[in-house]
Length: 567
Image (cartoon, rainbow, N blue to C red):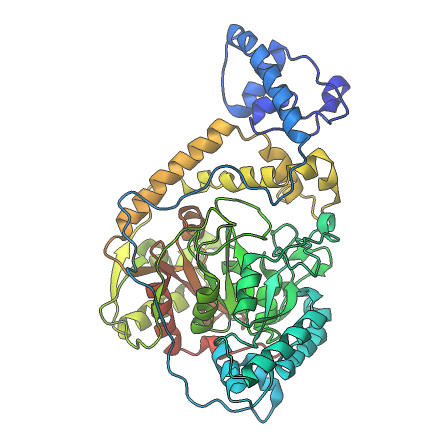
């Protein structure tokens, strides 16, 4: 751009009109006067058509907006500041699927130390906890074992930003002393874990996977970290995420899939999924806004739980989208995921978006008899995509059909359902708008130029373009979201849960509605890479959802397979 227009470098919340109202102004420059012709050009961006007289009448107000934007920019608000607005996913007439709290684990048989200690890498939390309880291994020994594996495989898989060795060994020694004294805090006591490096831990850097924040240290502990450590967990790693929670490329490289290191592990919970898959962590915390637990869990063959919106505190976590961000565990099986979820779920006075709801899980149930499970019929019926010479079989059609058959065999009543007739994809710019606000300071300061990826679909361009999203259209999209939430709630009435192919419209839709899901392995493709199926719950229906997924998983063995790591 030339002349005075070159002063504009970022945009304000009013959207396209923010261009004409001077929100592009670098703080050291003075805004240029607005004209009718500038407004008429800006109309083309926001899809409006004003008369010259109407445009002329706006000038004073738009200049006032510009002054407001400049004042707000001077606040230099950090990512941790939340808006004075809270998204609530609860539909009108909502009745909680669980009417009480309860948590009952399946019975375990005696677990013994393996002859080959390397097999510990793929033991479940329950198995490791039994070894600790019976003093066949100490927490220090177990923690050292996983730290050694992290160090061994990280150079190839690039799944850890920081290995918190000093902190971990200190906490493990404390855990051993407590366990020896008979003060066991529960199943997670003494078990190592990792967290995605968008969760703060006061003694270590929290990098967001980004060049722009790689030296950032936040002097707080995220609530999720605090809760896991209160349960006796041992933090051993801050795991990688694609830069600012997109993809699997971060400032240190590209996180790999342990099943096939020519591929990335997908994102953005890239390191959590890769490390668990490779047997370098028993479990790890990921986050999801639009697929960031589901996608890497599928790619790496893990079990990934995305809780209902509001179930888990986001205090101390990087904000990408205040109304869509969710934190959840990536683990070796469903019961492990349920264990971790039970420890981290609940309200938090530091996060006003958390919502109180009962959680009732019974892992001793062995049959799906009496369960009414919906399935997206159109998705399961679709065996091919493309036409003519480009016609191809849907890769997961056979495995997903087999999953339906297995659920029926286990006693479930399958009920066909269909999506609401609503423009789900058209609402997803809600994420873009919120992300552009969360990281507007990068655009204002030109630090967006530092980010690793600069292509058209990367964050820098999204942040810049999304400054043009008008406040009015953002609100309209959220009004449509309200209709979607209500519509989907009505369609799911009478069902305990539903099931869907993992890669489908459902992924975007339910990240908007706030429904929970757990993704589990259900087969392998022709190249030997894992595939998955998604169990979806009613809002705050994690209990029934996890029970059903566990029953299915107990009847299959896909989750027990692991990569050879021959590299």
